[in-house]
Amino acid sequence: MTQLSDEIIHYIASYSDRDVAEVEGDTSIDDLGIHSLEMTEIVLDLEERYGVETDSIDLWRSFRTVNDIIHAVGELLSAKAA
Image 1: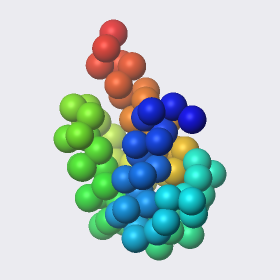
Image 2: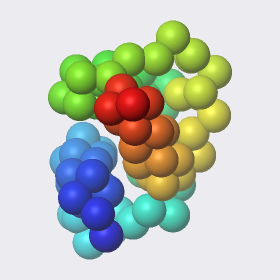
Image 3: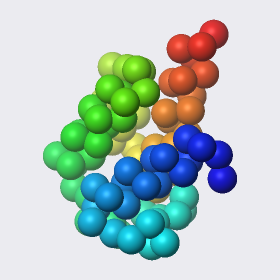
């Protein structure tokens, strides 16, 4: 697991009031009980935390698993570094 994955999994676990052991990359956002308003809050927090930004609300709405979030943040960080 990468540092980014670990950080995001810990954040999502904390946000969803779950034990970190219950949250893995393939854990469904729905299974965590995260609804669209909470997803918006998570996205804004992660954008601020990692200094990235996206205008694509469709991207964030397409997330189904924790790995989807990790991948998107990783891609944004890579684009920022380029």
